[in-house]
Image (cartoon, rainbow, N blue to C red; front, side):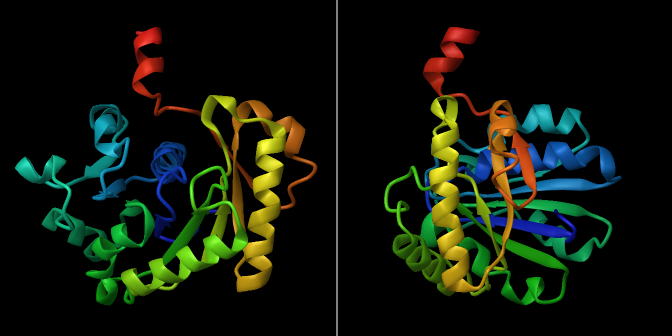
Length: 227
C-alpha cells in the first residue's frame, strides 16, 4: 500500500476521505524524511484536515492548505504551495480532495503536473452515505469525478463505516458492494480501511490488505462529552 509518491483520495461526500487521509499520513510519517498532507477539500465538508494542523506539524508532517482569508473559503482556490508537491521528488504526499465531482474541480487544474509524477488516485467507497449505496450510484460518481478532475481513478478503497456505530455487518455489506464496483470497472480494491477494534472479525473474510483506522474526527457532540 501507498507505494506511489503521491496518493490522492477522492470520492462521494461523506465517504471518509479526510479521516482516512489523517490516519494514512500519520501512519506513514515515521517512514519518510519529508511528508505532507494537502487539503483540497473546498466543498463545505463537515470536518477539514486543517483542524488538525497543529497536531500534524508537531509530528513533522507538512500541512498544505489555503492561506490567510482563503483558509475557510468555499471556492476552488488553494495555496500556490501545492505546486511544491510536483517539484519536490523527495516529498511523500497524501492529498484529500473535496466530496463528489464538484470537489474534483480543484484537482483538475493540476492535470499536467500529475502526468509528470508518480501518483495514484483512490476512489473511497462508503455505502452508508447518501447516493453511495449501490454499485450503479458509485460508478456514476466515479465517472463524474474522473470527468471533472481530468484524472483517471487507479484503484478503489473499501471504507464503509458508521463511525462509532460501525459493526462487522456494516463493513462486510459495504465490502460486497465495493467488490461489485471492482468487477464492473476493472479496478482493483487497493485496501479495505477498517475500524481497528473490528479487525479480528473481518481479517479472514476480506482478501485485500487491511488498513486499520483510529477515529480522530469526533463530531462536536462527542468532543463536548470527552473534553
